Each structure stands twice: as C-alpha cells, then as structure tokens.
Image 1 (cartoon, rainbow, N blue to C red):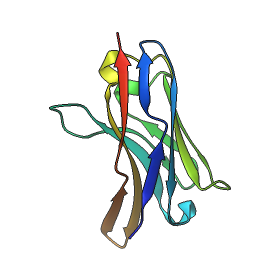
Image 2: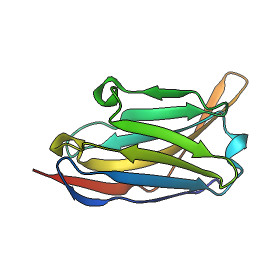
Image 3: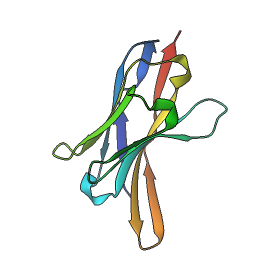
Image 4: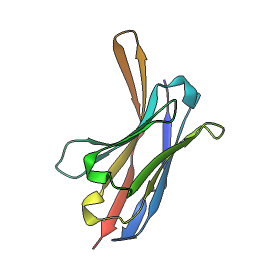
Length: 120
C-alpha cells in the first residue's frame, strides 16, 4: 500500500504564504499524476491542483491566477504546493493525492491530510 506523507500546514494570516510538501513511499515517477485536494468543513473534497509525471500542471478555477503553484522534484521524490496571498476561504484540510491508471481503471492514493487555517 502506498503511503503519502504531507507536511507544511499551519496557521497563517490572510495574505500570507505556506508551502505544502508530499512524499510518497513509492517512486513519484510511478504515478501518472500527483495532486492536491482540499476539504473545508461541511464541504466536499475538491481539486486544488495536479501535476502530471511530465510536469504539466492543472489548477482549479478557485486558485488560478498565480496564487497557488504546484511543482515536483523527482530527485527528492516530492511534490509541492506553494500557496501565496492566502484567503480565509482557503482554510481546509489539504490532501496529497497520487493517481495511477491501469488499462481503464484508475487508482488513487491519499495522504492523511494537513490542516491549513487562514485567519482574517
């Protein structure tokens, strides 16, 4: 079973920055994509950003415009989420995701989540 270890969450004031890190127990290149999702209280888990094994990023509309940047360092086997200009509505538990496909089937692996709290 693949394990994903997240770090970097915490409490920050609005307008501040945080960087989340995620390191899978397997080789990061063995996954088709890595990503970050978040879940706010009372809401469903939603996509924040993904990055393919080739390095192509994809962002949710809510974080487009340069506030968030997803990146990966294959040599460190780590994916990052740089979050700038944080807003109170960014408060959520952030989950790292690793996704693989095998034929027509998709396999998702999840971290335990890291809390991000943005105070106004």
